[in-house]
Amino acid sequence: MKDLLKKGTALSAVVAGCVLAFSATTTTTASADEACGADVTMTYVSWGGAYSASQQKAYHDPWMAKCPGIKIVNDDSASEGLAKLRAQVEAGNVTWDLVDMEAAQAVTACEEGLAEEIDPDTHLAPAPDGTPASKDFFDGFFVSECYIPQIVYSTTFGYRTDAFGDKKLSSIADVFDLEAFPGKRALEKRPDGNLEWALIADGVPASDVYDVLETEEGVARAFNKLATIKDQVIWWTKGAQPPQLLADGEVVIASAYNGRLFSAIVEKNQPIAMMWQWQVFAIDGWVIPKGTKNKDQVLKYLRFATDTQRLADQAKYISYGPARKSSAPLVGKHADLGIDMGPHMPTAPENAKETLLYNTDWWADNRESFDERFNAWLAK
Image (cartoon, rainbow, N blue to C red):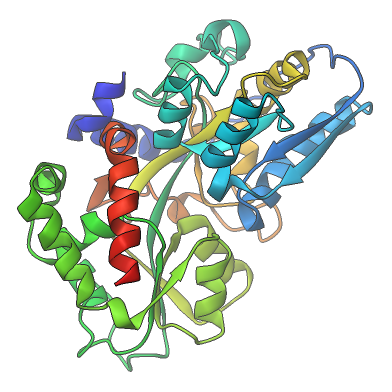
């Protein structure tokens, strides 16, 4: 299924499936009457902020209410998840029980033997109509035998609505246009996403960016384009940083996770707007660390936390789409604000007109060399 992530048809199918599903209004619940296992404290690693809060409300709190002897402790180290997991496994001292990872990192973790393998149809709950989990998750989402998908999200751009008069950000080229849109930018301190955007802004068709990055000329072209705004960039490493930088007026444009921007715009009423063009479309999910002492309890939790209802419940708190087909029709209104969440999803028709599908396999293969080159470029 990994090959599906390389094809535009996979993105089209996922977007179309999500869009159609979010337009439905039926309600169904899936039971998770599984034994809780022994009383234990477990450490779950995620990204913090609005995303971890959505997991807490949708998954952790209900599971702890169901299983009073289970305590879940949150660790917001997911941005360093792969490196720290590798260190724990290699040292034979695994203290984490579950790690939230982007798909490319999960592929690497599985290939390096850092994560436990799972069988979706054994370990995960079927859909309410009996459809096995392997067929209920959107095609291409099981990128490795160690990965349990949760949500589809995007990294896109937010900008201050009071920064450019009547002008609005409308294209990725605007991010690189310091004359028409002056001011500081915030970009994530990593090569992926930034290199693709730089090439698109420099005129490369989105469908060709990974082919261009296979060439030395293409890589140089991407870095050269990034260099045109380098001295105006604040580099962020935590998902909470770009919305705060925008809110404080330290930057006028920032790349950010769409759910973080939703929280800033809709929940906190900040003077920020989103530009959806060439949002980088990706999936996020769980891996079980190899050697965790609480594997049985983790598997029981995952069966519950990734069932149809729980994945739909998360979308009540953050604008990320559930990874299951059967969950999408259950997504309705925001739990606190009462607004329809469908239009705020990255897969909504108006938001998904021009979407770049993150190539998980390509980055899994090239991560180390490009991280080194990116860090060397930053140091210049």
